[in-house]
Image (cartoon, rainbow over all chains, first blue to last red; front, side):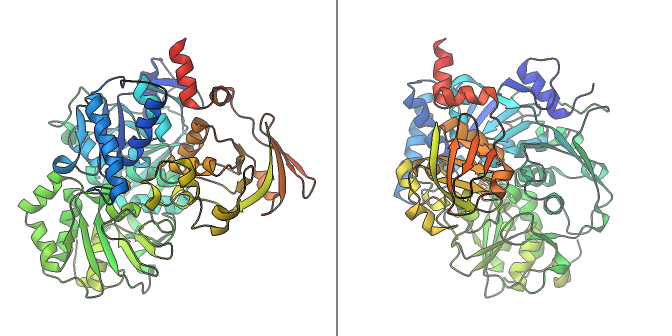
Length: 423
Length: 164
Ligand code: SF4
């Protein structure tokens, strides 16, 4: 019987010829990732049972991105614990301050994660590396600790749900809209425990940035992972970056799927997820009058240079509405630098925006732009849960960068088309 | 092990941001985290829930972020077990890993109201509603997961494995 791309990668990690959904396996891990919050707990677990060394200092990656630059004294202490841990362990991949970025983009940009890898991370959006054809999934800190000690972890081989996207995308519609639309269709537990496999002719021509957004948000449908079969676009992205040898896997023609969902993209408009779940989506034409106080662009979902270009193309020569605070969060220092070279930072400054260093900041309600009671934000992040960006009675609406930028100018949620822009 | 206590009922898709808000993630001690457990969802819970009480929730409990602070805060609160129609997967793994008992049963969720008195046999998965007299059976725990529980969580399990 044929296997899916996910089953093939897991079989390789488990040292088996084949695996099937539901099977419990022990898989060797290629990479383990953690941030300031999750690594602090994991490091304590190691200490508790008296383990001195991680299994391989080159395969444990730590990025201090959530509450950094240290948001308060408690966070400073937490980062200190993690920094000390990284130094004691002699981790070769440790990122903070001058070389930091949002963890997932750091791993992708620097070729630390490569196609065919099996990766776990102490962060739910670790599923993002499926964009380049890796199996990756989020775990809690105890799983992370176990993985750091042994270099392996048990998994239940997930069933796969296949999504086939066909047709040409409308103007201002990208990967973010496709995934929001999909989650809107299947719900926040629509792919619970499963692997989502994204395919179809629309996907064949979807740029890497769009794949990033889609794989990133697989968890928002409850999935264990989200994956794209590597192709020419993948090859272009990883060559020159990959720090290790990589392997492209693909699903067999006779692979078994739990379900196949076919989506014709021709009629899909830019999507906006209303509070307080990513599945609460509407077409941009059906949003109505929703005034906003803040617009936050960037984060792991939409913090690449392509995302910043898209936002800048809308903001160029325009001013942000006087009621709106526009905040920009480039994904990494490298993206920041590139945005500077291309003059994008100037466009943001001219429009009245504020540019932050790369950090998770307000995406998870940490710092650098929280909302007061009753305030409303549009953001290019991936979660709009109750209180996600601040006060429990504040609201977050999710969209792509172009819609967010246009909304910042309009003072309410709207589209670049209303500003007379064509894609 | 038997746990007895009051049911605290919650709806569907209760996410980890709601279970333990981000602003407390610079804390690590379970008793400290417990003070803020579910405070945005039901402020009474963090104040009044007692040792042994039971959380009963609808589908997809624990969705969202991977923060282990969420199950740790529930355990720190002294909650005997969590019963839900279904759990999100990272939460499911983490709960077992830290030794927080969780049970899946849709029928129990339908047959239990907030404030009902419950008695749960964690070994057999039998859930008794002492207020209504009804009984329910939770989906049995896979043998492999039971082994982790018996070893006192994943770290205990690993320690044992490293010794042998
Ligand atoms: S940017 Fe937001 S979603 Fe992404 S890793 Fe940071 S907190 Fe998580």
